[in-house]
Each structure stands twice: as structure tokens, then as C-alpha cells.
Image (cartoon, rainbow, N blue to C red; front, side, top):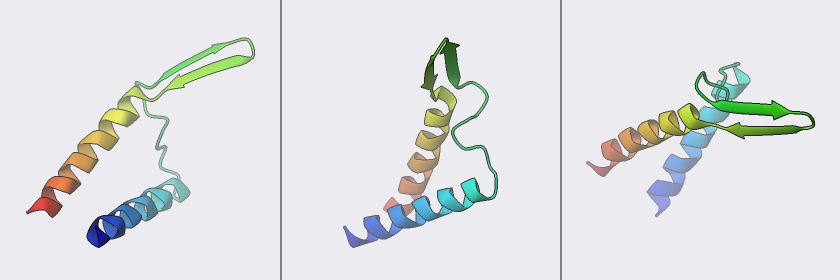
Length: 64
């Protein structure tokens, strides 16, 4: 459990550093944004896929 918490913390710290450096995490091409009047609907399709692939690869590496 301790290793998992450390890895999760490192991943969040790395994501925070990338955001501070200006990487557009969460606004990738392919994400759905609908704006009508005062309402905005945002669904991060591509961002979800990228995060899923990265987490799958990281967890596969740490399982070994």
C-alpha cells in the first residue's frame, strides 16, 4: 500500500509540473467542447484515453 501511495504522489507531482510548464493537459485535440449560450459542456475523450494508456503502462512496469 505504501508503494502505491508513493507512486500516486509522484505521478500527481509530475502532472503538476507539466501543467506549470504549459503542457495543455486536459485540452487535447479530440476532446468534446459544446458551448451554447451560458452553458458549456466539456468531455475529455482523448485526455481520458491518454491518461488510461499512461497509467496502464506505469502499473504494468511496477507489477514486475
